[in-house]
Length: 402
Image 1 (cartoon, rainbow, N blue to C red):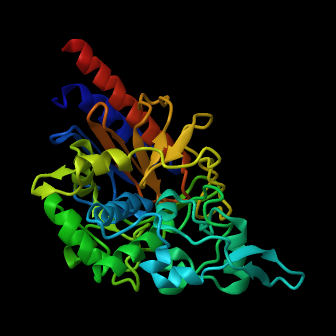
Image 2: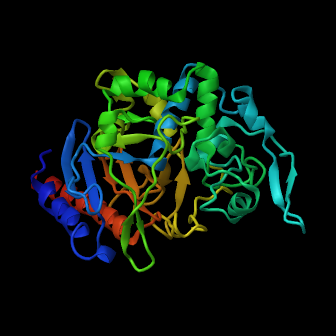
Image 3: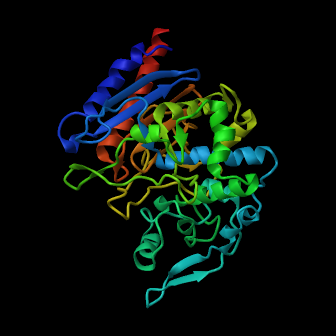
């Protein structure tokens, strides 16, 4: 494929979302589309920070938040492939501290948490599927109360204490999006005997030729990092003095990586190519096929994410009204999406309004990166959906002209 049919409509979307008044724009965006071989579209518009001269460029570095999860999940599946990890064994066999977590049943009249032991052990499969009982304080009112009244640290602190949240329900009871993958990263560390960052460098980044992705930025990466902005209730944008910590206490498999978009595209291509990277295999084909399928039980449903901390997230949902499920570790859309994304494709997002999808059927994937809070930003999220839609429109035009 060439970018002939792709460039003009996709450039137009990036230009539109970075122009005009604050309430109708984003400060800057980088977006790319790849086929199985290489990027077929690369675009960057706007500034890395409002009021600054540095333009967004293809090598701009982003805090990629929960788009980290699929990368952490890849390290987990490598352990499964090698026979080092039983997904259905107690996760505490590999990460003992997870065995200390209790179930939060609510709060007593004095406001103290009511805790009990879980009825069953947490498994790594449940961590991969977000059914272990863990949540996030920006999506769950009980966790928010634990943070406000009992000092529960936020996971964005990347501290060991922030992992030790109570469970919101017994393991396996239902699906709730949360800090599951951070614990899955601890499982990997327990198996490998190394920090997760080192494991990823050796076993994921090296075979993919990725150098611009890390839990701790080099000086060069810091110099290219986009600033995170807050959107006010009136639509205004303000640069924030906030960043994920470099040299974190814990390498968080759920949200801790920094990366440029071009490096993430190498990861997407690996999934389009049945686990193969330019420097060797990352996963076996059969592992990839297993990892992209729904792993939830019929009673476990993927639904809307309720934004209980308005500064961090709006209520957000991909493709409301369509059936969605979860794999290891992606959202699966079980029906064709309005954008043209086919049933069975996978993808997810990051808190600062980063979005990606991987369509193995058509050999196509894309990534849209902004740095804005709260999640579900109406301008960035809508721009992303328009970007994905225009990509599939261009795909149809290319096929019709062939």
